[in-house]
Image (cartoon, rainbow, N blue to C red):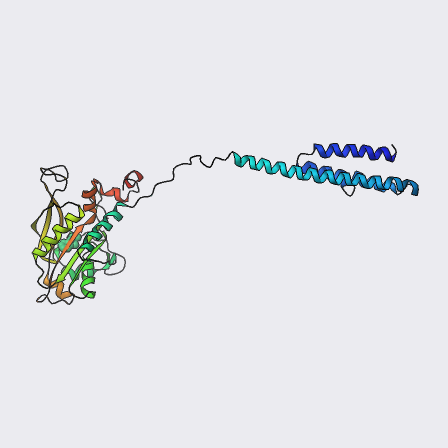
Length: 343
Ligand code: PHE
């Protein structure tokens, strides 16, 4: 085949090959075949050397023209392939429906403890109380000794205590140690409430757990009497249960750090004539309280001849159970979403 024919066949061939290349890979192979250093066009250029000057003059420009055609065709194909790819990617997005529904993310709610703590704190703050806090790992002194419960006192049996490996340290069995911290640090008179966790080494069942919430209340001033305690307990319960017609009564109770000590009952907030919550009695036992024992005041440097006070310690977990109608205390820490979702 003479060079002229070779040029025209190569041209036809390369146009066909580039046209057929629809992927980057195929196009690159075609480029190497025709435009590569050892490609067909380079070979034709090489053969030019053997020709006469006359022929060179005629075929040189033809070969250059062929190379140009190859390059332009290559560039056009390259752009066309890139465009096709872009369109393909875009087509994928076009099928992406931004309004299509996704799976439902989990709804988050506050834990019932958070609700009741906030609510109780608000009720007491509206009555002028300050919210205070205390450590959960306590010393024997704060949990017992300073509360008129010396080492050999039988009242220690009321508290199944988690003792820590550190001598004289325990997980507080009630929030009453916060009373002692408050008496040691606050200026008189003062009124505080301290919600928090307490720990008891007990077998668990629907109404007992090794950890639950209590709220301590302490009001110390001059001439504080049972009348103040009665009025405060009643107003607080009315606030907590959001009912004005709640009444209370007191029965004698015993705790070494109060004298006299009482158990407070309230009228059932759910019925008038007896229901399952009040066990058909119309009364519900709610919390113990009393006037601060003089020994307790003295122990924290307060003169019981001048000052007196009242304290109460209610089971906040129990109040939450009554308020929200929860029948098993273990649900609070079960992590069950069906339970938690309701709050
Ligand atoms: N701290 C007592 C308990 O948990 C409750 C209490 C507090 C009783 C304050 C009277 C006064 O058992």
